Length: 139
Figure (spheres, rainbow, N blue to C red):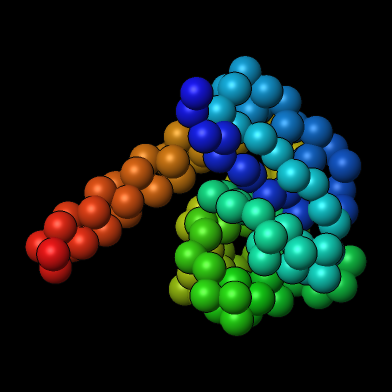
């Protein structure tokens, strides 16, 4: 049996959460965990094996920048997909410069979420392969 890959969804906006969960429900290897603040996400990131994060740019207790700081503090290298309301001007380049893996407009389209998940999982697989190769050379 394959190990489930957990996706953390940090979105106070219920509609984005619903679309992301709907987009993942046909993939039995994916499991979603939902919260609405950076504070709540801390326990999930410390106790769980989170592989991917969808995070709204504005949260109940801060922003995605606070999440990125938390990830650094916990020494976690998890791809972050930023969920940004479509009607706001947002500095995409700045977000990518801060380390965001990708950005999706909210309200999210199911196919966009699925495509981003596929890209992120390919990225994670490639990173695991590189790590295995480096480890085998070190042995």
